[in-house]
Image (cartoon, rainbow, N blue to C red; front, side, top):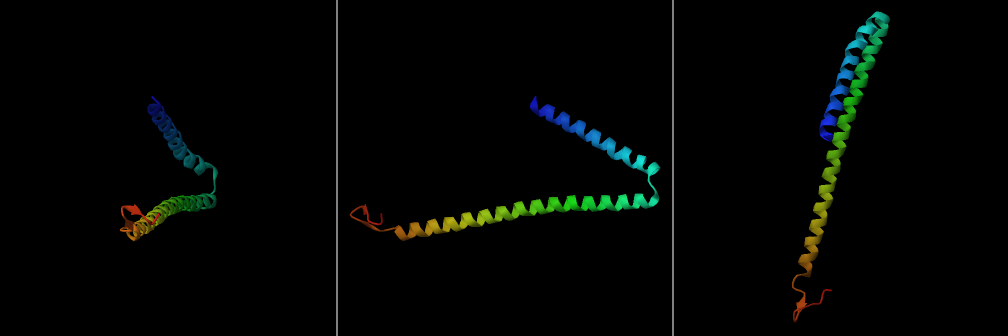
Length: 99
């Protein structure tokens, strides 16, 4: 039920945003001068560019964090394996003298 409600809310929000996106430019054609329309157009392009750049930067940061985490985990595993190899065979009469 919750999933259905979420999907319905997303659909309603998409319809409202779509309606606003279609009505606003036609309303502005009547009220703005050609110079104001050019300024608005370039402002929109800059805003879209900034949004796309933000998404790429977030995605890149997540990938970099994942790589760093994997590298730290690999380093830890190598250190643990090295320590285990150093402690192999340090037993006398079935007692572990390394501890």
